[in-house]
Image 1 (tube, helix red, strand yellow):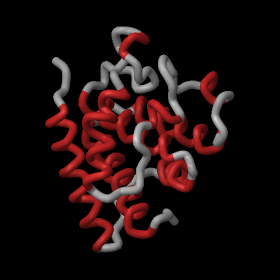
Image 2 (image 1 turned 90 degrees about the vertical axis):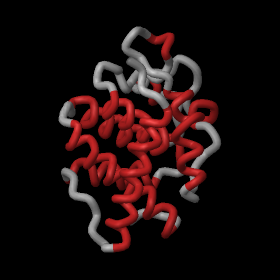
Image 3 (image 1 turned 60 degrees about the vertical axis):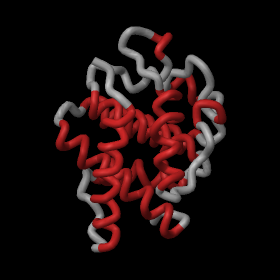
Image 4 (image 1 turned 90 degrees about the horizontal axis):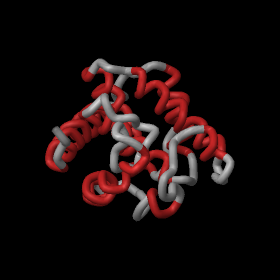
Length: 171
């Protein structure tokens, strides 16, 4: 059964609340060092789309692990998901509502129709280091099937969005 926008929004709201509490308490959510290292690159990238799309892929993995988070267009197969719809209906409005700096459509700006998040896409991108870090994070996320671990990763990624909002840059 497909996940509705309200479920995604609920997961984001709860995670963002935890991230803000962590920020106020100066207690970053604990995740593996490889997640922190790749996040440092993704969140310092000038390509905002990487972190916004990452959030949609993570939400998809949390809610439906049968979907392939490297296939963000439904016409790419039965296990693909609609990344653009998720971004337009949930991610982008959420980030704007939380006053987080973000783009107005990563699926229109950087990632075009029928894109797959793989090495082949890398060639057409300016920030290859940021994209490589994005792919590293996808690799970690797609291998994880424990919901609590995925929610911990979400909390960390949302914490990084809070840092971005509060400081304009991320350490």
